Image 1 (cartoon, rainbow, N blue to C red):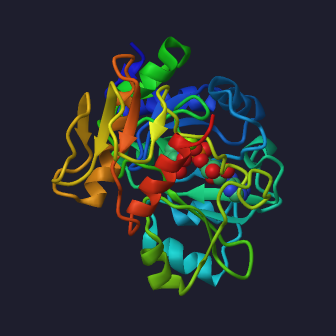
Image 2 (tube, helix red, strand yellow; image 1 turned 180 degrees about the horizontal axis):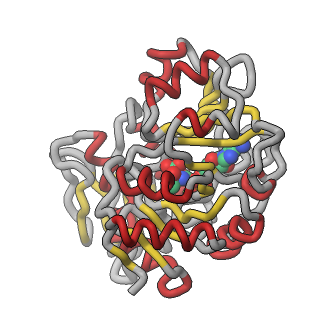
Length: 317
Ligand code: TXA
Ligand code: MG
């Protein structure tokens, strides 16, 4: 079994494995990451290979603290301010990459910018300190599929093709970090995520929101329309239950007539719904059902990130 209980010994072993060019899945507060030494081309290439990820889609460098991040990216006053307030946390900053920084060009997909974050998870931070180098880590799922929020999800994705999975239990936030581009004069939200737009605007004033679904936009290379996709078709409406359809519910008033119901939050709490989203999509993705219908989710706070993931899950494949 590649699943390991985190301890000083297993974390040290995982760090050695990463430094020798291997891949390790590890928990963060958002989703599980598939980590490699960001300074080794071959190790980073192995991430793209294992995930079948298109190489134009750059990766996030994970570091243990702001002072370390500053060795790899250029922080202006604005970037400093927001990083001091919100790191460690589910926020990725896209910043000018330091030319002298020894990060593989495969991490940045050749862009002059670097996406970087400090995750808010004790196991991730201990691992990052032990590695002592930036760790490139996408979500630990096959490209385009549902992201993993437990060690078992990661094992279901890769099985024995992955030597080590550090098990930190279910992740707290449940969907990916917010990606904020600070390379231009105006801050641009590239991916809604664990930190809400409202929280960012409380610190930065009004920010722009990248138009989604323009895969050739150089600002947001990873915003592919079809993503987070279970095998079953996903329908963003629950008006008329189709035969055999399962329901992804939200709130106390659940419509009848579905073959199965998974309620993201019976009390209608968005933060709880976010934490349950990917596990729910996996749980309903069974051949017993004909498809997954989704109840409306309020478009506010972390609800915007939930809707972003659901729209991509429902997009034409
Ligand atoms: O919560 C997370 O961010 C998780 C955990 C493991 O940290 N990681 C994650 O990585 O979601 P990934 O690879 O699934 O998503 C990274 C996103 C992609 O949309 C990618 O296009 C974008 O960040 N990105 C990375 N580098 C970028 C850059 N230089 N400019 C613009 N977007 C970038
Ligand atoms: Mg991902």
